[in-house]
Amino acid sequence: MENKYSKYSDDILIQMMENGLDLDENMFEVLTELGIRKHPKTKDYCIRSLYRDLGYDEYFVSSAFSTLYSIDENEAILFAKNNYEKFHGNALKTLLSELWIDSKIYKENPKKVELVKLLKQYLVTLPKEQIIGIQDDYSEFMNVYKNI
Image (cartoon, rainbow, N blue to C red; front, side, top):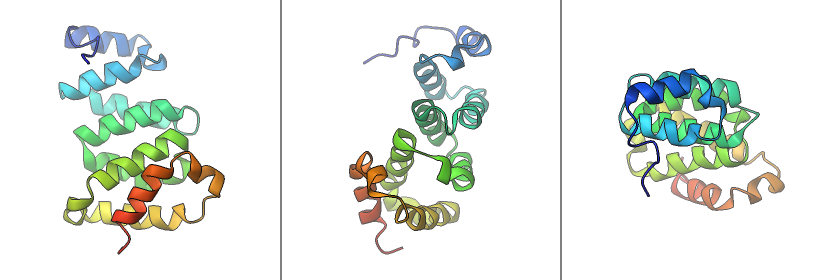
């Protein structure tokens, strides 16, 4: 499915973000499009959205984190390492998903190994009700990283 913003120019997308679109649900698509284009401002928009929305809007956090992870994995890992306890619902699911998908290459990045260890310790403390909504990604994550 084509992103409806794929035909927009970089300038228009940036203008939309600067004019407050980042507070709208269309942010998902605009950030994704900027990420696909590897636009230099994408990282800043993602980080701004993460700090603003963490703990408030799990879907915005999920979208911004996923885009940040795709354009600057180290920055995304650093953010997650410092804020993983504030990830809830869909945002936590996205974090786990990004990490278990990369499980074959995680040893190449010591910061990722640290994050995986922190998350494993944290996840076992969560109440079962919180795990239910992220069960598939939780199970995959715990399975692929069972030896850490």
